[in-house]
Image: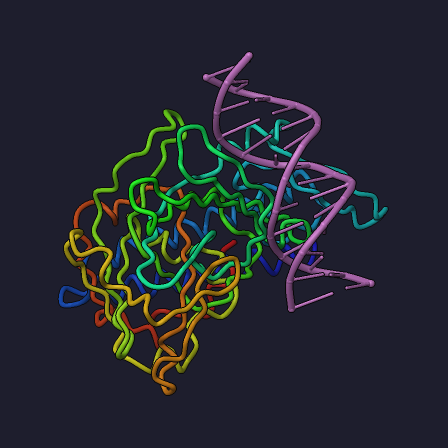
Length: 337
DNA sequence: CGAATTTGACCAGA
DNA sequence: TCTGGTCAAATTCG
């Protein structure tokens, strides 16, 4: 077995073991809420699934090495290129030859981003990933054009994540952002995840937007509040966001990290956009508001297309019950993706 | 000068 | 045939 895959496999299995240990601690009657346990079980499941994927791949391709982003692509059912170690010749493996159709099946979801102050012409938010604009189109019946962005690292790392940004007809301050595909590039430049607004899952079969019945999460990072609506906590902590050390020690220790469900009606007001000013691609650049707090970091908004039992109903989740410092080693979750 | 953006052309699906 | 999504050459930017 190739060293890289062996390492990946060990990493997956080790992580599964560690998560199981954490789950065990949370199963104590006086411990964390059920949602936290469910979240951990999902992480464990994901870990073992990927380990199995590695094993399956090895059994039929004993000479090939799979890198993390390629694993992610395989999971998406997409084509990946592998370089045969012996000949250096590239050949393609795939679960399906029809890449375009597969691309169409990538998870897709929308967010409505409200911009209160300042201007944000196109691509209104810095969501932690770097995007390159590749097109703009006037949409029939819409007052504003739709802009198309793809991941900057698409060519280098094969990241197929794209997003579409369109200003709302009803409220020019609202941008409808449709994401498609997960980032496999691990280029999340920021720490965690912030979703500024409503997220609606788009059904892959019916192509219809499904109202997201889920609640928001308000992250309190010291003096800064992050209002997060999410349908799935595991979506928020998307694998690719973890590929690099995610929780800066200063970040973890710097504030009382807590997440509480709040009324959906309070959605848009909680994020203080006034702390930001126009930046790249009409986006928002972080302004150091207090000089001493690292909590003003924007956390990348990333979600996946999966539905989780965690998200059914209100998510009353307090991180007080999860010790990020010791029991929740986010910085070691680089195995995912 | 390389990277990012713009914009018309092209293509696939409805 | 129309529309949305992507490509790629031209242009602009840093």
